[in-house]
Amino acid sequence: MRIVILDGYTTNPGDISWAPFEALGDLITYDYTAPDEIFERLDGISVCLTNKTCFPKEVLEKLPDLRYIGCLSTGFNVVDVDYCHEHGIVVTNIPEYATFATAQMTIALLLEIAGKVGHHSDLVHQGVWTKNRDFCFWDGTLTELWGKTLGLFGFGKIASRVSRIASELGMRVLACRRSEVTDEMRAADPQVTFVDADTLWKESDILSFHCPLTADTTGLVNEETISKMKDGVILLNTSRGPVLDDAAVAEALHSGKIAALGADVVSVEPIRENNPLLSAPNTYLTPHIAWAPKETRLRLIDVASGNLRAYLEGKPVNVVS
Image (spheres, rainbow, N blue to C red):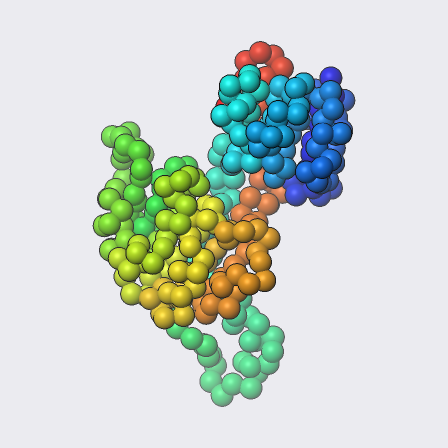
């Protein structure tokens, strides 16, 4: 059996091995696949893996032999899963593989905003401290997180881990969850107070987003919801870029309504030169790397190959179609 990986470069730029897939069949890997190359590369192929190569209905209709699409990610919006469900194409994803790394990035962005570590390190290397009269100096306002209220929109594994770290930093933690909050969840995370969305907007000093991208969450942070937030709120986004309306957030950063933004994702990636966040003050942007530690990507490959192995054994897991 031939297995085709259409766009493996971001998952594995050469520092890890595809061996778990090679053990399952004849593996063909491509770093990237353009839309017009899909049909040639998947001609006669029943099993493929994708990260960002898209499979809308009009593409899937022209791939009659395709029976399995393994997403090398948690998100699976690049695949028309409704079409796949109707036509017996199994689609799998990789839930929770980046829980630890994404929580780590969320806290890293928060600590950078609060302590401005990178900024002050740059100033030291530029000689500003050397020329300073006093034994210390600081540029701008530094923030102590103890006693601040962190609001989490969305509460799965990642948000749970963020909440525990924040609690250890002395923060009060609120969370808003779209689905029901069970007694088991409350017992597992006693440091969290679950509230509705309006309470979350109103009471949080820092808001962090950990929700999937759906019709309801697209543009969730907009002019209206921002108006409900505290003056000087800090926003963190390590979920999906379109959850934030970039223009509305940039305007609020300029006005000071939002004190700072830390985001690992934006609405269109790679970020466009005209994205208003690039010129907004107090904006800390990283290029979608929360999932990228080597340990995290090794876990991704382990789960993805396990998904394929289970499918081949007739017992598919992590199915989203």
